[in-house]
Image (tube, rainbow, N blue to C red; front, side, top):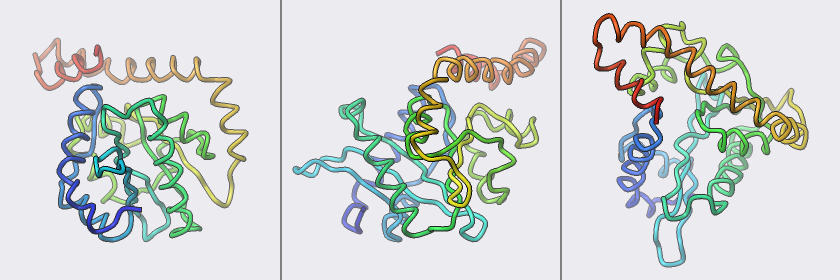
Length: 225
């Protein structure tokens, strides 16, 4: 668990979050170094460091609807340590911390990545509709800085590029079952993700052709990446 001394990494963490999102061509709710430092001070963050003090990875907890919903947000790993199992270890640790601090809360997440979906499935998360997530206005306000916000609002917050996943402590499958389902359907899920993104972009691409909107053109460029 991150401690107050780890606040010195806050700017490095937020810079890498932004750089990673830009490289992947995905949206992200932007966070400031001050916000990350606050989460660390509240004991709601997990950080990975080398014995020499080099920053490796990070994730934090957010609560919504008076603690009824909890999100493990901002998972990020330094480029040199990706595909090494660090992300999975951080996810497991932040999941454990969330269950300890909020044992009755529903844990949820939004992701555009199949790798994160896989990790979530191993913890017992299931894909759900947006209607099963918190409807707290503060949560959705965090999406305003995402490049896909216009798509989200055009769908009345019922769909977007991200896939919603939920762990309900009162009603859930065993992690072994959700993991097995993911492995069996991984190829199908990947195709569905790409089809979903293509389908959601179509109205905006038509708008771009009619109006020459640079913003929507940028979305198209990101999708093609």
